[in-house]
Length: 454
Image (tube, rainbow, N blue to C red; front, side, top):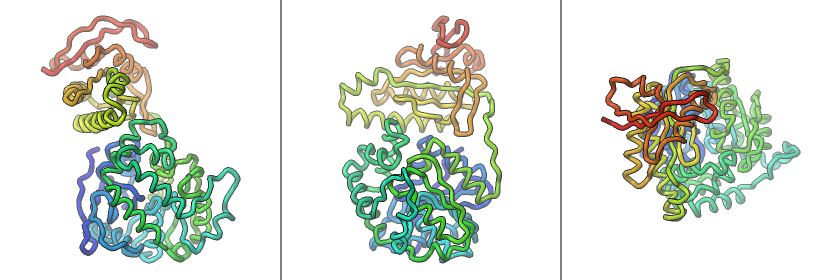
């Protein structure tokens, strides 16, 4: 799907950036501490969540005051003032009532909003969030064997100060603490550093963090009347799961559910469908069935040539900047050609397209564009039936074959199978035969072709 257009709602003198997409019952998503509603769509691990929600509900997503594309604040806002952001977007959209989904700090806002504006909330879903100070003395009663250590507000603030030391340059500290499922995924770490830069300057982020430390929702959980689902990731090291259990007990009639994993940035969990499906089923009343489907697709694998040597030649910091440009450029070109990035593969990408022409044109464009700032890639393309899984991953012989074609490709070239060449006969792309090859794990010999634009 196309990235939604960003618009602005007004909360007093402040302009708040928001987007809407999808079909179905209205869902207002209240984000956590770090957000930029345009950058969120750039990475496949985040985009798959937003797209899946939009298949079942009409979603609205905004950057809170002080962060992302929204106006900064002069005076530290209270929680009540922060909730004016939700009202402003709801009113701009003309939504009298909506299902509310809050994450972390956004879920804390959601608690007070649901208590103070019950007439605007159809249902409330909260995950990986915290409780008001008045309930702190009860947290330890809800701890269980194996839970992470409970961080107090000062410890959390100190940890975020460590993150700010490399803010926008190296997001490894944030990944290790908040998103351990992605530890070692260099592509994701590079993207997260970009999200940091686009969300706030280091000083703006500290101001945003400081503004959160004094927030107090009081007895809001006890006053919530809407149907409520509370979810918490079991191994969350930022906000302990005991707070989720406690919150589930405090909110009248709430349903509580624990999710396996350790990510506080819970959208990125490998089992993200557990979260997404729970939100949709609870809010929209839809029972979702999971299935693997088979469909025709054009599969493209790309890889940076000789990345280890290039990294050593220019140094780690400069190479990270090159890779960041590679990721951003490749994803943009794939999106322009109506493709979908499935995953990062070390120093390359796996993408899927509906039509062979889109995949081939994209590969040629990527090769040319990346060469422009000193990055040489090789790519392989094959078309055939693929298996598409519920988590967005793909598999099957066609996927394996595309990977093998990429491994055979010469440096700086896009190679395709004979299947792709045959499907594009009469088109503008130029194919040059590269002989017959044995492809590991694939039966028979395969004629391969390099491809270039006319």
